[in-house]
Image 1: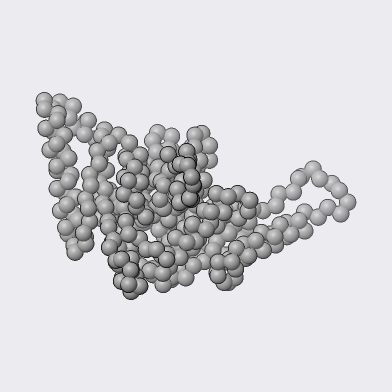
Image 2 (image 1 turned 180 degrees about the vertical axis):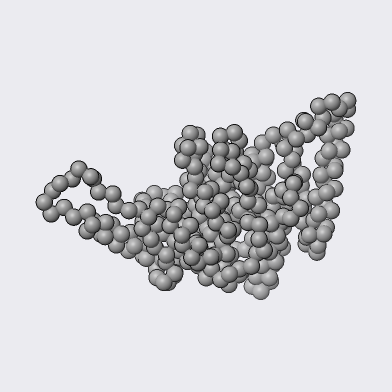
Length: 327
């Protein structure tokens, strides 16, 4: 099984403590130890990106005479701070510092991840209000929707593996190729982390409740029986998936209900080290009004959340021609 060789960490310019860097260093140590144990290449690279939004500089430079010199000094100051911070908090680990200065931070980070062939992107969880997405899209939400590699949203707590890694699988439509491949990728990435930490894997599956038509009045029609049959069928599909991938039935947390509520409820019970979940990457008005399930789950849970987008799945498929969906 492959290990992490290239880790991309986003540094928060306004925070002194950097949970994302702490996760990156933890994965670095796990990956090196595991690779050395197997006699494989133990070289692991960490790139720490400090994103500076161009708008913050524009406010500073409004009355400046020499704007080019001011910009150079502005970036130099941030580069020095980043190097000093890494020399203290990543002592003994070679971390490549990188300051990016752009209007489109999310797009720039994605481009760097593609260019460097990173295995995972780690970002500290943002705290944003209910209506923030109407005005702008916070950086962590941009990553969750569009990243071509797995994204780990790190919460502000010490990383101590508790013994469980949860994987939320979507088995609503077995014929959906992207959904099926996303389930496999989620499980493989969780197994990778499980190899490092020794945590066991549990599967979470939500079965949508059956909603019978209210106007049906037929002899012999029993909606309760149909509800039970639908739940049994959904549970059977989930257990078959688990069996194919060597997950014990007792480690399958199957519950009827809304997917978001089920995942939050089960994670609050088992208190996993991390939750692995896929995203549908909605766009436009549907994204603003309905929101993305994994975004809301990330905000509710205290554990780290590792998200895999359709782009991260499609990007790893062998194709003869480039896919437009990953451009």
